[in-house]
Image (cartoon, rainbow, N blue to C red; front, side, top):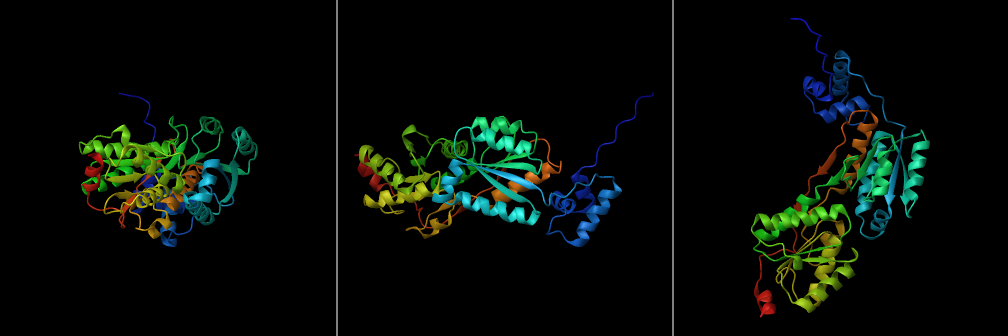
Length: 351
């Protein structure tokens, strides 16, 4: 029986990693000429790649990357510093890779077309990072750019673009489950709506309640107009005055709202956590200095920036296909704002 010979499978990074006994990321860094790889390992990887006729990629050192930041990202940079730490991670990784970052803010409608046109027309830019952007106009324009693009702290529902985010859904799930373990069944969720990343956190809160047979009632979701702590304090004060205290714990979609919730509850005479427990999500440094120190879920902000640039680098080198959505794990940080449920105040308010 005759037939055409089978085409040999192209050697991949995992093949080289297996032969060398190292991780795929080590192989990728060694081939890209990055720092932090032992000389003997780098030599082994290069020799193995050459032996199997693997096409060695060029280094990204000296390349330029455009960083497009939304108005929301820049506002956060000034107020709550989440963006600040993402940028710290990006800048440190760019320095290690020898990449030049060039920031372009998007402040007004129509800026999307301007920055995309600049990126397309300037051959010195090898790729683009887009920070905290959900707008379809920007995503669609970036998808047609013809150069590598990675979304940072956002995602594309159509998966036209690769993205790196925290695992927001599991972050909220972890936080809500910690409160449930402490005996809380009525957990208020505070958020500023509008972003998909925050919707994921709302979904995580629902997941935890439903897993434990608890109702995710609509009256347990409190929307706030902005992330400012003062607005969070006003919102929870207004809710309790109008409808009474129908919850024993508060989970917020961000530490700044948790800060506001604590202030508002304390101003009404409630003790945190003795009367009401409060849990945040983010783990901003200032949260450790609140009174009481805030229990929260740590979001790997610096790692978010570094991982996004690593993914973009791999795309620029032709090493990352197809498009992918990367989510980074988050973990609980126990401090002093969560305690076992106290039903006395709720029972009193409900009478």
